[in-house]
Length: 166
Image (cartoon, rainbow, N blue to C red; front, side, top):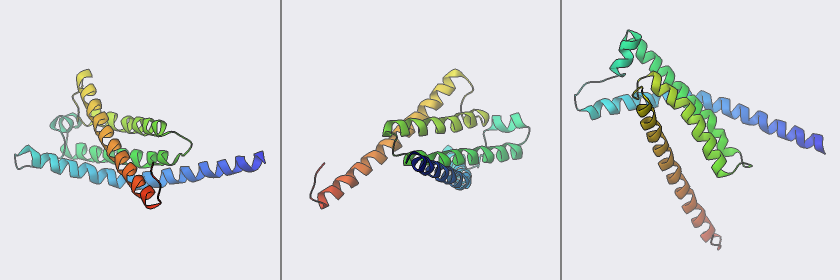
């Protein structure tokens, strides 16, 4: 009995690892695409009518705009891969929603904050780091709350159809 449940757990872990790898591979190009979208949106919002592919400080630090763009694309891809792979956390039914959220938040922060520092998306100081972390946490909380409220509303509608109310 113990051996069969141990083998089942091993199969579940192996399947979770496969899913993490597949989602990470899909997340890489999605991260690159999101990075491109953000640079276009930020350039449009600047009002200058020009396209800024990277932060000028980043290009100066690397010695070329092309090198900075290439590294920024890699960083965006790695962030997308990290978020994609980490999405398997939401399938861990044995974990509480708080544990899942904390783990996903931590993985995302571990991917995003170093990338933001390297690419000069944040001011390179304690205040800049704290501000960027606060923005990340605020966006994470807003998205999490929106998803939670949406799911709760769908569950209530489903329960009403079944004649039950939670």
